Length: 521
Image (cartoon, rainbow, N blue to C red; front, side, top):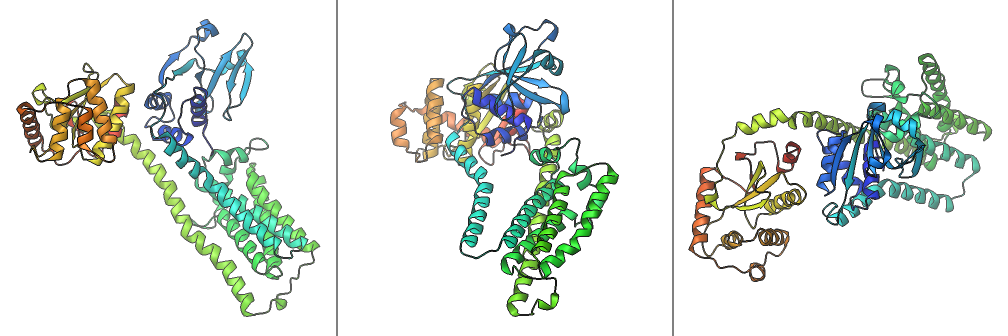
């Protein structure tokens, strides 16, 4: 899995502190943050995983390594902002972990000249880590294994075919060239769609100041608004490879290669005039030339009259030409829409998580007082300025997820408190009412928190055994409290659970509970 500098550095910090968080969760948390890729996004994600962290601005002129806490993330303003995980500092050198999590070092003076003095230090405890780590690890592993598994399956099929077929050396060489060309063409297509892919950017940067993007985004790289030379290359190698498999002696194979050779002159000439070289494009031109040499040395027939218009030959030709084209015609729009959707989501996120816009939308909602007369369940810091009120239902699945989310915040934050109000039928025969009364009757905050966590996390929802574990006496007072809460819900026009209030204001659309954390810092 290819990781950005920020993602790789944060994941290395997580591994160094021996905290159980998957690299997929690191990537998702950082990229979903409205301030990505900033130090604030790192700090908020670390807080979500229960790592206490603090950022500092160090005076480099008065800097001494004895004042520092290790490891720490150092911010480097170069290349638009990069991060480095520093593990120790001596009089002459700075030791750090690179993006591959390998130990490296640079001269102390060089580090101080590149570092802007901003540092972030984090500490972990036994409670640190992401929730559902094991299931997320399995999901992440399966996701990472998709590409290698597909490649392994393809290699296995090819090896099986080779083992059961007599293949001459020229055909094997041609097949290898076409497979390599197919792989490079796929990279070119990916780069033309997503120019920020770090793996391909590193490949394109080989050999000096090369820039594939400058070539691939130019008008010369397009045949039409919807067809690029990268698409043509992908179709050429995929169609000809399939034809080579179905009919290795097809005389159209060398002829098509011969017709493609003028493109090598066009591509190299354009790159020379542009004074910019695309490494992957040059690799494709080299493969076309190697393919031509292989055809010439193997004495392939160019005689179209030897083609033979048999049903098998025509079928092989049609399948080889149409199948890759039809597949790509179906797949490419899906890939383009997915790429555009990511860009649109990023733009919408800028508006959605704008602090002023959110508070304007929030203040436009009616405000409701949540007084002590309601006897809500109160968890977290009772002196916190931010109060989240949740109207809940003991048998509501989304309520259970919301409670789990807020409970995680409460455990690692001291700036919020949670108030829970129940919406029930308030009848003795209603099981929702029994559980709600039971929870409100519990006196100790620790007991209430444990009881709520156990109830909402339980799949069976066995009230009898749960009630025996947390014994109480329910009198008329609890019935009156439930009635008061129900009347308040009528006034607040509660139509569904969970309904979330922030400091008395109903959370407006399109905001969700998980969005609130971005406005709490």
